[in-house]
Figure 1: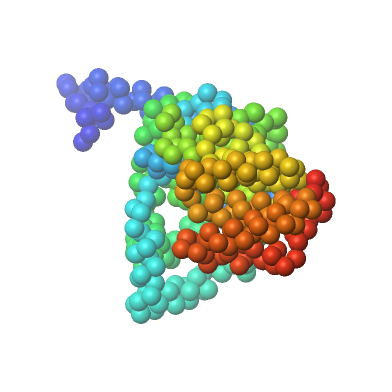
Figure 2: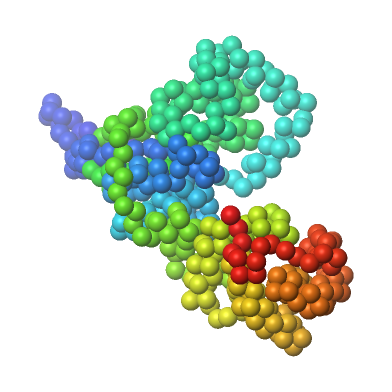
Length: 426
């Protein structure tokens, strides 16, 4: 028997030892600990109006936790980027002066192993068996019939945190374990959830009598709720108790995260390790995404506005670099100020001639973008010279394969996108 729960018999009386009393006190102190497990939907928050990132904030504002636990591995927590809603919850907790802890656990090879196993005849046969069991199971079949492809829809926060959804996944994983066992195909369901719960429990034990918010992917909630209900002194807060949510003004740091993608407060001191790569990645997502460099008119105006603020923060944190100058020129162009854009790109041309710019993307696109600006300014001769230089510099670099897409038909037809000083985007 554990020493903290040991009872001693003496003289016909049962005497509680000091160790036992300590255990009882610990149990009593946990009696008022409230834990809310919040089911999140990862990337779906970006496009689901019924469960947005702001809804995650409303949940936290309403529950008012003392401690926040997020689904991020401790070794990655505040060091590496992760799921946006988990980073948001971290920023929310930090902004409110709370302790925030990461409690995810996974083996980085599991998904790769799953992909390999799913191609084998044995697992194809097991998948068919699982489909059959799911189809005849009253819980899973009823849910599937009622909601179909629920994950691609716009279900609300109440749905993903509700009894019906969680009962469905509890049963679905029970069937999966019966067919596959605790296997990479079901992402080591039992092993991963057990390790995650152990990490979370270590945090909960340190905060007896407090309110703990645990944010986790929606398919984990049923496991944690079930486990917590077996723990003495823990009250699992039901989601329905929270409704309706309070909607307070966003803390400025939280607002910047949601509205501008400013997640720098998430990172611990000294992280991210490569600040330049961090800011480049932010700008790439906003103004260099799929087809954006080839077709700048598809870039939303909002992206340009946010990118300008990102660039301002970058300049405040690091010395001016060729990439910064390039991005300034691109943003001036997107804002419709071709004179300012030409000035910045002309600076880059001089740096290129001095062998101070080495990235082929910057070198080739500098000339291409100069051509666009000169076309919009009515200087066709300068535009053609710039396009020719871009084409001349592309061979032998990674830009060679995309040079035709980059230049499109600009060498034959002047680039036109409204007036020279008319902002781009929609």
